[in-house]
Length: 289
Ligand code: AMP
Image (cartoon, rainbow, N blue to C red):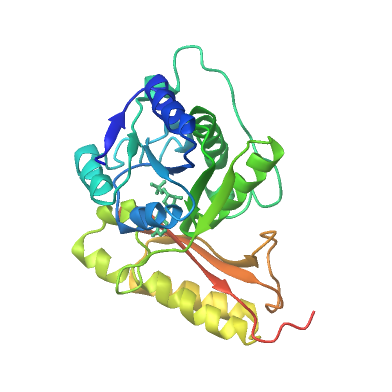
C-alpha cells in the first residue's frame, strides 16, 4: 500500500470509517512534521498495536509562545511524505491552520496539576494547554484505537495520559523510548537549527544526563551533581539553561537530597537558535521503600 495524504477532517474520517467497517485497528501518531528517524521509530513501534497507521503533521500555533519559533519551524511535507511512504504508513493527515481553527473557534483544553506547571510548563507558559487542545482535536477527529508519543517529551506524555483519562477519550496511550543519534544527541526536528559547531556541542546534554543518572542511581547527593551538570553544559557553549532537575517519574515532584524511587533527570537548554530538551530514567540501584 502506498501513502495517501488528506488535508481535511472529512477526508480523514472517510478513510478511517472504511477501515473500521473492515474491523481494522487504527493507530495515530501526532507530529509537527520535519520528520526524522525518531518519528519513524514511533510508527514502527505502533505497528505492533494496529493494522493501519495515521501520522498527523501539523505545526500547531497554539502551543508556541509569542517569542518562540512557530514561524521558523521547519515545514518539509514532501520529504515527510517520502519517509512515511518508505516506512509503510498508510495515511498522512496534514491539515491547514484554518481547517483546525476555523473562524469562531473558542474552546480551550487546560490541564491543571502539579506535573503541568513545572519544567516546560514553567518555562513555556500555555504550552501544554495548546498541546492538550490539539491532541484532543486530533483524537476526536481520527478516533484511533491507540496513539503513541515519545518519552523525549516525557512531561507531554504525562499530560496526555491525564486529560485522555479525565475526559474519557476512548484511546490507549502508548509511550515510546527516545531515539538518539550515534553520539547520544536525542533526535529532534529542532536539531536542524544547529550549525556544525553547535551540533558538535549538542551531545553534551546526553553526556551530562548520563553522568548524573549513574551517580544518582547509586545514591549520591543530588545538589552537587546538578550544579556540576549546569557548569558542564554552560562551559560546553550552551547559552542558557531553562532547567536541569531530577523529578519523580510518576508525579514529577522534585526529588530533594537523594534518589530513592524511580525518577528522571530533565534538561532544557538553549544552544544557538535551538532550545533542546532531553531526559534520562534513573532507577535507583537499591530501592528500599
Ligand atoms: P514533534 O514532531 O516534535 O511534535 O514530535 C512528535 C512525536 O514524536 C512526539 O510524541 C515526540 O515525543 C516524538 N519524538 C520526537 N523526537 C523523538 C525521539 N528522538 N525519539 C522518540 N520519539 C520522539
